[in-house]
Length: 64
Image (cartoon, rainbow, N blue to C red):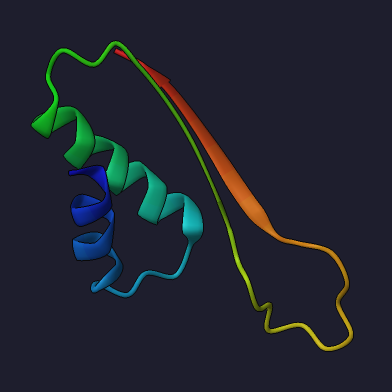
């Protein structure tokens, strides 16, 4: 079920990974109101930075 929520959210373009994770967290909380804590991380597979080595990502942690 969470996969379907994330897949649907990915259809809407956003400027920031942080925005995506925050909005996804709210959708997950709406779907699972019994949720008390949520921790997610997301990393880009390809960065738009020439010769970049490593990974770029964000992590979000929420307590309800």
